[in-house]
Image 1 (tube, rainbow, N blue to C red):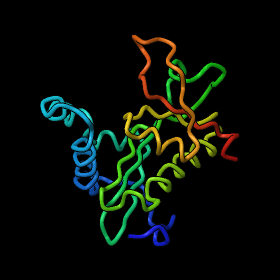
Image 2: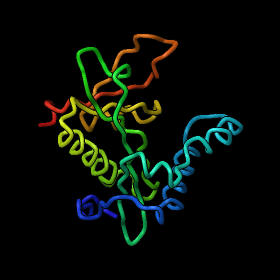
Image 3: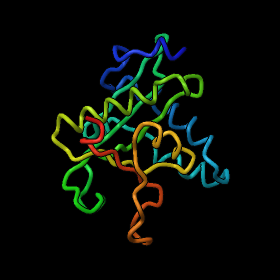
Amino acid sequence: MTVSSVQRSDLRPACREDLEAINQLVAEAIEDWPLPDRVRRLALPAYRYTEADLMFLSAVVYEGAGQVVGVATWESAEARELSDGEVTGLLLHGLYVARTARGTGVGRQLVAACQEAARAAGADGVLVKAQTSAAGFFARVGFQSVPVRDRDRDFEQRYWWPVEAGA
């Protein structure tokens, strides 16, 4: 897959039949996180998606060569998680891209789908709580680091994409 082959037409809403492929992407991503093996093994069940998740989250998949190579999920963000002055937002719950498709634009297309959903919903922006290793990616697609206000409550790696900046 090359950057030139990445197209918006390869995005579609996720469905129940995609769950096995989605959860394989999640497992692959967690394998790459800098965690002790035990922690990685314990974390995996919490990150797996179920049919119930698809009822409550918006989810899109990216298909390449007839298989799911990326997924993004989002939901409304809780007001207490948003930056000062922001009233509404979407929380980018998960963004996973197959190793073979990383660096090809798939992640950008998935993020763009969430950003478009935020615009359509009239939200102030998109919030993401990310792994440290993803900081560079989110900066490249226009997200800004959100300072930690409460170390006991706030996720340390939070990033915000304001709708007006992406207009």
